[in-house]
Length: 152
Image 1: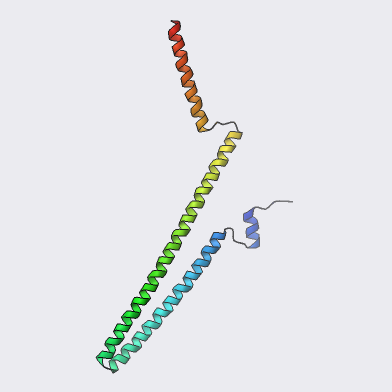
Image 2: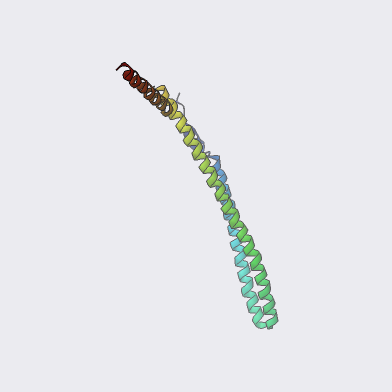
């Protein structure tokens, strides 16, 4: 009977290895759908503007000016919505980046701890123990030098 690693069982079942990746993919899909809706809306607005322009040529200048004003208002509203969505996406990217950085930091810490334990099991002293020993040797050397001076 062989044991399978988590990555092998995840690959075998088709389950994502990292739940954060699934969340990221879902967020990307939602962002893509939203961007598509905004593009469709912008196209409809453009077409309506073209139709209105043609209509305005047939009608008076005042009607045209009113349509321009309404178009500007609509453009301002659309731009605000797009800017809010861009900001939301940027915020989300920042959150994901922060989360990834935190994960790497934790992995590095766990790795450091495991390496230190392995070195300890092999009888290799840690840096702090070596530093303590160096200080003790220096103190003993100083005492020995002092004893030699007194004996002369």
